[in-house]
Length: 243
Image 1 (tube, rainbow, N blue to C red):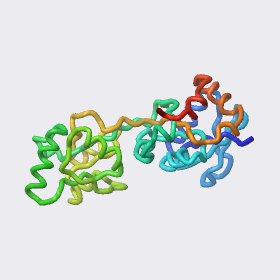
Image 2 (image 1 turned 90 degrees about the vertical axis):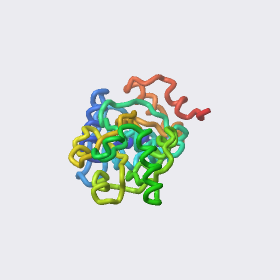
Image 3 (image 1 turned 120 degrees about the vertical axis):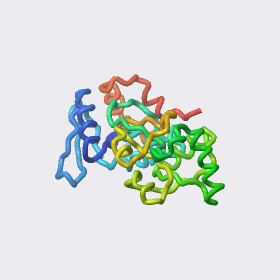
Image 4 (image 1 turned 60 degrees about the horizontal axis):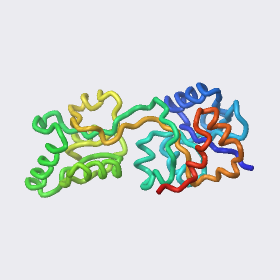
């Protein structure tokens, strides 16, 4: 029999909030070594091993079946895993880590308030400059799917792994798509969010790996799900293929 592996964020507010969430269900998650050792334990239930990872690593570890359960942002799962519903099951939104993935443009673009406006500007931009309007983001899959669904075509995505709001000032992009929770950084950089619905509303979520070895984890899964108030059939639902 093997331990059921639970992956949680290894540091910061997301880790603290995750620990608090499980504590609210009678389970104590704790570090067992120095802060940089990324070792932990779960008290209150037998057969569960705590694995501390960066939030961005957790989707891939779930998809590979190396952990059974993982807590990470729903945006990271959808962006990282092409067939995310086939790789993981979404068990429980956890009520923290809220952020919206939005598209923002310069405030000076007074006539651009919606995606339809952006589409018109993008076409005019290409005709004028000879290349497509650039949108800086690290969420390529989510943004591309969203813009395709809304009929926006004359654009190109440019990669930005940090300080995305500054790309417009630095003349490396004309618009951005990024995560925001308060909008303060956008305002400070003279950007405005388009009025349409966000690309994605993200929050910390408990996911289960469909490809993990649930049988060898024994009764730990059923006991853990019972403690979390999840239905008895949760494990069979995780391992059933998506139609």
